[in-house]
Length: 93
Image 1 (cartoon, rainbow, N blue to C red):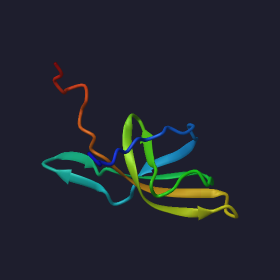
Image 2: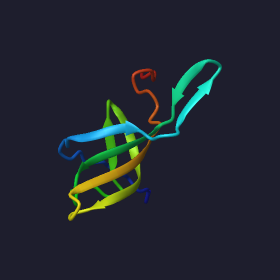
Image 3: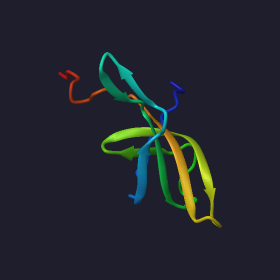
Image 4: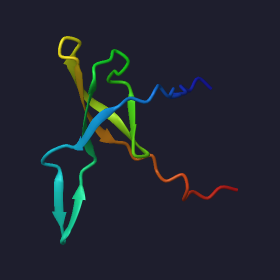
């Protein structure tokens, strides 16, 4: 039918420092919620691009921005959580 199909390929696991983006904590009705943005700092690699997806603690994130150089040796990634639904809760026949 001419439709485009997107298939994601999993790459190797990388060690990284991950924390929630500052200023994204929200207090609502006495409950604290964290926004869905994270900042990832890792060793520099050419493998990660803006088109990549990150998986952390079973959640998938889209890359918003990349900063880093081979000279620095580090790569800083800002990413936002993607809502993929809950496949375990879906009813299948």
